[in-house]
Image (cartoon, rainbow, N blue to C red):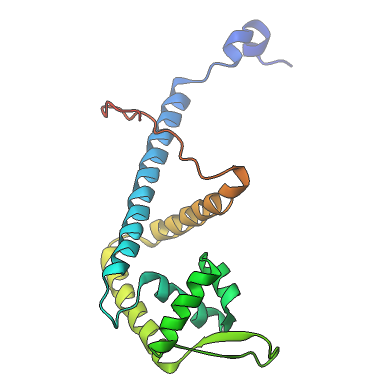
Length: 191
């Protein structure tokens, strides 16, 4: 049996109910707001990295901390693998490792499995530095997210994971182009 809407009124078969259209509009607004929030976080991270150029002698930059975290989580690594993991050039990582070695945070040794390869690993001082950084950030993290329900945290984790995939896959679609913002009710802009 053919549904009446398609048998008698083919043009009406494609028309969406008003409720669905409102829901889709609401979704566009929510996605736009999520994009705006993501850009704010991304910009804040950029500013954090930008402040790295103004650090005192003994302080570690955000990028250096990221290298130390990679070493803590993955164990000793050659500079090339560390560069790939941190998404930095091998030359940049080598320079950073030189500084970290001079500061006593890492040591560079020959690999026990392949003597031709030099690997970097955390020193006890480097481990203490990372643990202190993690504790400080954990405290700030918990304070900032106090009152957010667990289900919301799980949803945020899932969404951030999906966004990470979008940006990881961006190179396969010719770059990372940000979609034009949808005009929000009352905003007067559609950028």
